[in-house]
Image (cartoon, rainbow, N blue to C red):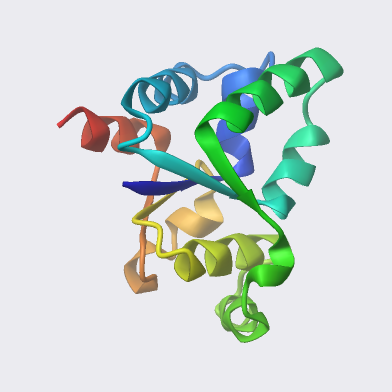
Length: 138
Protein backbone atom coordinates (compact mmCIF):
# COMPACT_ATOMS: atom_id res chain seq x y z
CA UNK A 1 0.00 0.00 0.00
CA UNK A 2 1.35 3.39 -1.00
CA UNK A 3 0.93 6.23 1.51
CA UNK A 4 1.68 9.93 1.57
CA UNK A 5 2.11 11.30 5.08
CA UNK A 6 1.37 14.98 5.47
CA UNK A 7 3.85 17.24 7.28
CA UNK A 8 1.79 17.30 10.46
CA UNK A 9 2.12 13.52 10.87
CA UNK A 10 5.92 13.79 10.87
CA UNK A 11 5.83 16.77 13.23
CA UNK A 12 3.61 14.88 15.68
CA UNK A 13 5.80 11.77 15.37
CA UNK A 14 9.27 13.32 15.67
CA UNK A 15 8.88 16.55 17.68
CA UNK A 16 8.08 17.46 21.25
CA UNK A 17 4.47 17.92 20.10
CA UNK A 18 4.23 14.14 20.12
CA UNK A 19 0.86 12.61 19.34
CA UNK A 20 0.65 8.89 20.22
CA UNK A 21 -1.25 7.87 17.09
CA UNK A 22 1.38 9.49 14.84
CA UNK A 23 4.27 7.90 16.73
CA UNK A 24 2.56 4.51 16.52
CA UNK A 25 1.83 4.97 12.83
CA UNK A 26 5.53 5.51 12.11
CA UNK A 27 6.35 2.36 14.10
CA UNK A 28 3.71 0.28 12.30
CA UNK A 29 4.87 1.49 8.89
CA UNK A 30 8.46 0.58 9.79
CA UNK A 31 7.26 -2.89 10.78
CA UNK A 32 5.20 -3.38 7.61
CA UNK A 33 7.77 -1.93 5.19
CA UNK A 34 8.03 -2.68 2.24
CA UNK A 35 4.41 -3.88 2.03
CA UNK A 36 3.51 -0.35 3.09
CA UNK A 37 5.55 2.42 1.50
CA UNK A 38 5.78 6.13 2.13
CA UNK A 39 6.22 8.68 -0.62
CA UNK A 40 7.19 12.28 0.13
CA UNK A 41 7.32 15.33 -2.12
CA UNK A 42 10.02 17.93 -1.49
CA UNK A 43 7.34 20.31 -0.12
CA UNK A 44 6.76 18.01 2.86
CA UNK A 45 10.51 17.71 3.50
CA UNK A 46 10.88 21.50 3.57
CA UNK A 47 7.84 22.01 5.80
CA UNK A 48 8.96 19.30 8.22
CA UNK A 49 12.47 20.73 8.47
CA UNK A 50 11.02 24.07 9.49
CA UNK A 51 9.21 22.52 12.47
CA UNK A 52 11.85 20.20 13.91
CA UNK A 53 15.04 21.00 15.78
CA UNK A 54 18.29 19.63 14.29
CA UNK A 55 18.26 16.45 16.40
CA UNK A 56 14.62 15.71 15.58
CA UNK A 57 15.19 16.44 11.90
CA UNK A 58 18.14 14.03 11.87
CA UNK A 59 15.91 11.28 13.30
CA UNK A 60 13.27 12.09 10.67
CA UNK A 61 15.84 11.99 7.84
CA UNK A 62 17.22 8.65 9.03
CA UNK A 63 13.69 7.25 9.04
CA UNK A 64 12.76 8.46 5.57
CA UNK A 65 16.12 7.43 4.17
CA UNK A 66 15.24 3.83 5.05
CA UNK A 67 11.46 3.82 4.65
CA UNK A 68 10.43 6.41 2.07
CA UNK A 69 10.78 7.54 -1.49
CA UNK A 70 11.24 11.27 -1.93
CA UNK A 71 10.44 13.12 -5.13
CA UNK A 72 10.95 16.63 -6.42
CA UNK A 73 7.80 18.75 -6.66
CA UNK A 74 8.54 19.52 -10.30
CA UNK A 75 7.60 15.99 -11.40
CA UNK A 76 3.94 16.61 -10.56
CA UNK A 77 1.94 17.86 -13.57
CA UNK A 78 1.19 21.56 -13.15
CA UNK A 79 -2.44 21.14 -14.24
CA UNK A 80 -3.06 18.63 -11.46
CA UNK A 81 -1.87 21.15 -8.86
CA UNK A 82 -4.06 23.88 -10.37
CA UNK A 83 -7.07 21.56 -10.14
CA UNK A 84 -6.61 21.30 -6.37
CA UNK A 85 -6.07 25.04 -5.98
CA UNK A 86 -9.37 25.58 -7.81
CA UNK A 87 -10.97 23.26 -5.23
CA UNK A 88 -9.94 25.78 -2.58
CA UNK A 89 -6.72 24.26 -1.25
CA UNK A 90 -3.77 26.49 -0.38
CA UNK A 91 -0.85 26.13 -2.84
CA UNK A 92 1.22 23.80 -0.61
CA UNK A 93 -1.81 21.63 0.20
CA UNK A 94 -2.76 21.58 -3.50
CA UNK A 95 0.76 20.39 -4.33
CA UNK A 96 0.53 17.58 -1.77
CA UNK A 97 -2.90 16.51 -3.05
CA UNK A 98 -1.66 16.62 -6.65
CA UNK A 99 1.39 14.56 -5.71
CA UNK A 100 -0.79 12.01 -3.93
CA UNK A 101 -2.97 11.65 -7.01
CA UNK A 102 -0.01 11.59 -9.41
CA UNK A 103 1.80 8.73 -7.63
CA UNK A 104 -1.53 6.92 -7.27
CA UNK A 105 -1.25 6.63 -3.50
CA UNK A 106 -4.12 4.87 -1.78
CA UNK A 107 -4.10 7.20 1.23
CA UNK A 108 -3.01 10.67 2.24
CA UNK A 109 -2.55 10.57 6.00
CA UNK A 110 -3.21 13.96 7.54
CA UNK A 111 -4.48 15.68 10.63
CA UNK A 112 -5.19 18.72 8.43
CA UNK A 113 -8.87 19.62 8.59
CA UNK A 114 -8.70 21.21 5.11
CA UNK A 115 -7.85 17.85 3.54
CA UNK A 116 -10.21 16.01 5.84
CA UNK A 117 -13.17 18.21 4.90
CA UNK A 118 -12.69 17.47 1.17
CA UNK A 119 -12.38 13.72 1.33
CA UNK A 120 -15.52 12.93 -0.65
CA UNK A 121 -14.27 14.30 -3.97
CA UNK A 122 -10.67 13.08 -4.09
CA UNK A 123 -9.23 10.10 -6.01
CA UNK A 124 -7.54 8.85 -2.83
CA UNK A 125 -8.61 8.43 0.78
CA UNK A 126 -7.72 11.07 3.33
CA UNK A 127 -7.42 9.48 6.74
CA UNK A 128 -6.18 10.54 10.15
CA UNK A 129 -3.32 8.66 11.77
CA UNK A 130 -5.85 6.80 13.96
CA UNK A 131 -7.91 5.64 10.98
CA UNK A 132 -4.81 4.68 9.03
CA UNK A 133 -3.61 2.58 11.97
CA UNK A 134 -6.93 0.73 11.99
CA UNK A 135 -6.64 0.12 8.25
CA UNK A 136 -3.07 -1.17 8.51
CA UNK A 137 -3.79 -3.42 11.48
CA UNK A 138 -6.53 -5.32 9.60
